[in-house]
Image (cartoon, rainbow, N blue to C red; front, side, top):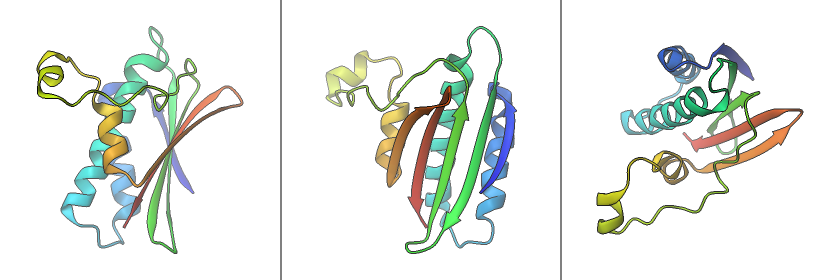
Length: 135
């Protein structure tokens, strides 16, 4: 599994996205699929940058691997910030009234809806969020 470690700062998102795009370059990913993967990366990385270490800046390690049978990409985010399981939160109310009143809170829901698998664990002082998408 190839990985990159960057400071958990919002303006470093492009490095993570480029890294994953490079890992996927040899595969025939549709533009829609690449967009879904990039949006998931953005939602997860920005949440880490915004909340995991606040007010200090820590690091985030992002690993990416393409596996066979079935062909899929596995992307893992590791950070040493505050323990937080984003999957423990109940999915948001998607009724029209709730959407009109809500400010944010849809990011992890969008990730769960667009990826084939999303999992979280906390091990050895690290948050580990893993997403998978069939290619």
